[in-house]
Image (cartoon, rainbow, N blue to C red; front, side):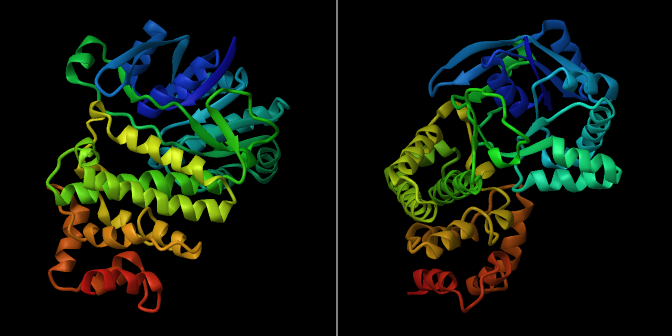
Length: 384
């Protein structure tokens, strides 16, 4: 049986990556450091996956799995050496730790004279492959790092799957349960691979990968945040409530049209395909079982209002490609009024806004200068 290794047996690891490998006929070994989780996976060799379908769940069982303790380096090396592919789904903060494990894997593969191998990095960080290589460069000697450069591929990925917390009654039935939306695709960077990635349905290798990075950030993340900030203005709690409001639905739809126009021009791609993706996103936002809150999706506004992030970044991208980002011009100021309970980032913004103007906030939080068109367009929208 074909084998794969997944570093991280959490929501994305089991809910998306493990599912894709399982459906392609792979035995999956999860690497994790949670003793109870490792014990349960090794006792059952399976776990339940509940796919949210709007008003009900479809249950599936992911079989042919086992788990390895993340501290057992020899066992991890052996599993990787028996596998066709590996993936990480551990979270950006754990990358420095997992890099040490991957360095040990690389060292052993070099000593055994083994050939090319690829890691798919399912992490929420742009250019995560470069970050991983930087860690490895500091961990490996010059000769071993040269071997890695020629034989070990690191493919950054775009992860758009939403994984809600499972209802307590389902957790009580089986603590291994994972709930996931009905979306099981991973887009990954073909340019990061050494040789060809295995042919795995729903693991979609593409080049230039900046297309999918920008589609995720400027369409998915952007429109999600637009729904949150407009939904907050109307007092909604959940994203599905916001997207069910006809006025907000139209606003989100228009924001997606603007970015689709810019992306179509920039990448010389089919606009209709991008619009179809936008419609798919809006249908996913309407999924009531996701239980996604306005506070979570709009949370940490300091990060989300940053120049290179989903709102300002998308607006600048539109302007660079000849599209006027009308909706984003109206939405960006709303980020400065977003103040859900318990959000320290929002509190920082409110403290600043108590003594400063929106113009000053655009300079501080969005890194926009007075000479830039977007700066003027936003202020004109507010002040006329």
